[in-house]
Every structure is written in structure tokens, then in C-alpha cells.
Length: 294
Image (cartoon, rainbow, N blue to C red; front, side, top):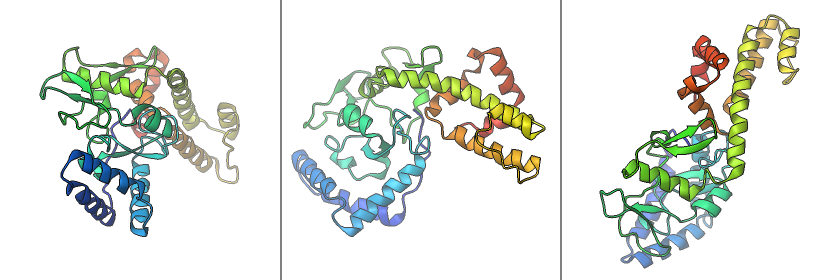
């Protein structure tokens, strides 16, 4: 997981969210507020103004995804759902707050995250508890990495040997607790397919980086075709240098759209753990490395 690069929601959509939230906040009890949230969320596409608002929200969130159309939790599936980081059923005061939204796949949103959340209780401690569904949280500080506000890699490190995440902090700290609770809710290390695809992504990133380096040094159409196995096809209607640059742009675009961008960022940050040949490629191509960094 990566911290999302924030975008400003257009004023019209932001104003509508605030009006919807004010309707929730006007209710007196937790039960009344959650009921109002449920009703408003269920009807969020019933009027033209709300349909436009949530279309704008989804479009803006799409531009913030860690990869093109990628779920911001698993970094693999299609980001299709507007996800509440603080669940709307437990934190009605955050139901229509722009900073509480990100895009997630249906699998992460409904099967794993859903309305599960851990909180620090007592406040300021490192002790956590899972909030029971349908109950008002006894404390408000969540023990879950907030991708709109926090960098997950401050809390987690991806082991490049087994492609699983591990807490960076020591046990009995708030940072450790937040990392553990996030991994537990999202099951990022327990889903075997995710681990396998991270392993594949590691190999693909290494191979694609080498391919881009070699294409950039190539001196003929034939040499490039041998490197890329003619995929994607070269535009031989252009002069060689122009054709090579056009291909390089496509290869870089494809590279940056690959699944599991966290794997690539961790490869950069943990360069010393890579093979000597890959370390050498990194050292010899700092500009390219910077260009491809998430």
C-alpha cells in the first residue's frame, strides 16, 4: 500500500457533501445519525445533483489511485467502490467527508474491510479493540493506517524474500498496533493470490526495468525487436531515434501501470537486498529510476 496523492474535490461536489453531512450531524443520537447515513447513502444517486456529486467524487478518486484503476488496498483488483476508511456505520460524522474516501475493489471493500475497524482504547495507549458492529465506538482514534493521511511504508515493510508485509515498529507501540490491525483487517498476507502476484510483480519489475535500459541503448530496429520480441511493435515509418523514443514512452507507461507498485518502491528502497546486476542497473540509471518511482 502507498499513501495517496491528494486531489482537491471540485467546490460544487464539496459543498454538496457538506450539506449531506450537516443532515447527519443534526441528528441527536448515534442510532439516529447512522440511520440517516444509511438512508442518504442508499439514495445518493436518486437526484441529479447527488448523481453528479458522486460521479465527480469517483472520477477524482480514480485519479488518486496508486495505479491506473487499481484498488488502493490490494493493488491488484479493479478499484470500483467508494470506500470509507472510517466506516460510515460506526463513524457517521465521517460519512460525507471527502478525506475519508478512497477507491477499493469490491473484494477488499465488502469481504475484508467492510465496516471492521480497530480503535485505540484507552486513548493515547497502544491497546486496541475491534469495534462491535452497530455500536458507537468508545474512542475515536483508529488503529488502522489512513491512506489519505499516512504513509503505509512508515508502518510496514515488504519482505522481498517472501513478499509479505511486516510491522516496522517494535511490539507494544502504537505504530506496531496500527500495522498489525491493518494487516489483520485487510488480510494482505493471508491471501495467497496476493502474495503470489507480488512475487510475480518483483520479477516483472526487474525484467521490465532492464528491458527499458537496453532499449534506450539500442542502435537499430533489429536490436530493439530482439530485446522486446517485437512487442509492442515499432513504428518504422519514423526515423530510428524517434521510433525508439516513442517505444520507450510506451514501455515506461506500461511499467507505471503495472500492478503492485509497492513492490517496485520497496525494491528501490531496499536496493542492497537485490542482485548485484540489478543494483548496478539502478546505480547506472538514476534518472530513469527517478522517472519510474511511484
